[in-house]
Structures are given as structure tokens and as C-alpha cells.
Length: 326
Image 1 (cartoon, rainbow, N blue to C red):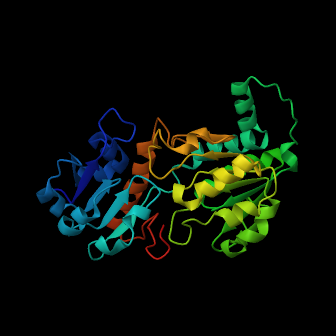
Image 2 (cartoon, rainbow, N blue to C red):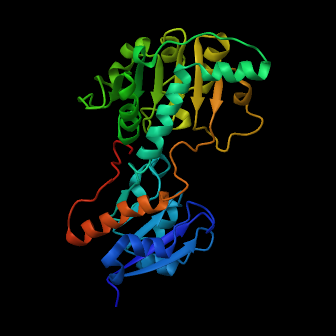
């Protein structure tokens, strides 16, 4: 007799780096695997009878109605992604159950990618790419990174990882968070309510906050207009945090020197989107943070740790706060 049942729901095929295999779950659980029964089903072919008996659920992009109606035995639901806005509000959770996410697994890849992108923006790479297409030789110089100030909106695992990789270059980091508490990877921290006061000093604005009702459209026309002429912006958070129409207008007018987007709404970005043709805009197809090798294993390590915590009656790691929205 097994002590608990783990229900894995896959949206992806086994060839995908996002596929969660039975072997990977068993490996992550370690000794606790002997106490478990692990079942895997495609999203399109659920086994609702098995789901009703499951103690733990692992998936991403799942149907909350299915869990509300058939997950009455669940102790917690683990999401193999960091963003959880699509699951709000948490009124679908069975009584006593929690939602946990994979926040933190993106820090290594996303930190390096974010630092790379900020350096590209500060060096005017979008302009050079455009000039290459136009066969235009424009040897306009840029200032040293050590003279730059980068404002990071959202100073969690991802934002601070980007900051930590930029600081060795002498970049001044101003972090923006809900609390504004000091952080070792920032020269200065301010609360979100003070965002407007630091935008004028930003040579580059990095948007790395969760998507919540409070951050939806947070970077709009007013905020972009208050940035200094020649500044740049990188959105690595969620598409709706930034008003892309306002961003495009600022790029086309030359107020911003460049921008990079890794997140969009909708995704994939349609071929008909006007964003493809905006000058000095770099488009990345939402690939900044996910690793081609080992991503699922890192997500499952959080899940397995929480199974151990749950069995021992200890608090869960990465428990999602329904009020905060992440």
C-alpha cells in the first residue's frame, strides 16, 4: 500500500523540455518515491477517478475547474512555472490545499540573459542591428556601463539575479519592490509607490515583477514619458505589465533608444503584430528564463522538497499568496 498518490498532468509531448516524466518525479522524490504511486496523464486524457484519490498534483496551464471538481483529496498543487496569474483567485483550491509554484528556478538562466540584454541595450545594439539592415555605417559611441543606472522593477529571485550579474561592471542598481527593504544586490531600494521618482534616472528599466491587478499596465505612457531621453526598457515579466502601444510610440519618436521584449499577450506573437516592425525593438520569443536542459528537474526539486515538508507537517516552500497574487 502506497502512502500517497502523485498525479502528473502533461500539456507537452515526451520530446519537449517541459515534459514531466514518471522517472523524473521518482528521482526527485528520492526515498519518498517508495511511499508513492505516480501516475501521468496528458491534459487531453485525464483520469478523473485517479485524480480524486491524488494527494499531490503537478502541472502547468491546468484547468482549475477540473481540480475544483475532482481534486478533493489534494494537499497541494504544484505549478511548474513561476507565473500564477491565470490561477487567481484561489477559490478553486480544495479545502486545506495550497498552490505552490516554481519561482526561483529561472534565476540562473534568466539572470544571465537579463544582464546580457541590459548590456546590449546600453551599448545601442538595437540601433546597430537596424543600421546593419539599412547598410548604414554609424559609429556613434556609447558610454561605459559603469556610468549607467539600471532600475529593476520587481526585485525577487529574477530581478535580483539580473542585478547581481550587472553589479561587477560597476552598474548602479536601483531596485523597486513592494517593501522597499534593502537588498545586497542593489545600491538603493524603493517601494513601488515611489517608482515614478526613480524612472527619470534610469538608463535602462528592467521589468521583472509578477503580473497582478496592481501591476497590470503599470508601465504606461506617463511612466515611459518620465524616463530620460535615450533610455531603454526590457520586459522580462509578463506582457500586460507594459503598455506596448506607449512603448512603440516612444521608440518611433526616438524618446527611447531601444527596447527588448521577451513576453507578450498573446503568445506566440502573431505574424501580423506591428511590434515586428518597430525600430530599435528586439523581440525574443519568451525564451529568456527556461533552460533546455534540467528545467523540469529544478521544478520537481521544489515539489519534492514540499512533499517532504508536508509529510513532516512543516510549512511549504513557494506557497502562493492569494492576496498578493504570487
